Image 1 (tube, one colour):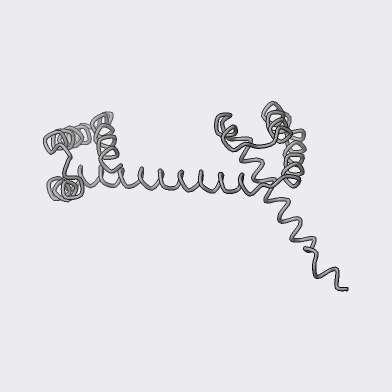
Image 2 (cartoon, rainbow, N blue to C red):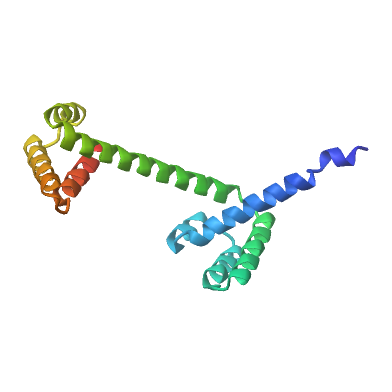
Length: 162
């Protein structure tokens, strides 16, 4: 008898609609090869292609709303899961990047103590190569020139930490 209790509220429906539209906007920004791996329906794929071609702001807004409507008609759980995994991978890559940056800065600033600590973590690192890069990076910093050695040190440390 209480039919209203079984149905979601207008607010819940609108929240879900906006969530699906936001997911659709993320799909617009994905490269074609990633879109293909998700396995989205052709109608949604065509709507995304049309949104990518659209340049006028109002028309793009309407197209995004249309994508949201199409998303409501399909099971979007696989898309949601893919986008969540993609974001998690991006967060992990970002964390690795920051960790490598921190190590590079510590190696340049602290020298041998930081190098010893890094070598404990990564025993397969080339100690001589690291010392040379650290020395060059310090020299560049003192001379206030482009940090080519610091970039090389960053790349080497990032590779070690992977």
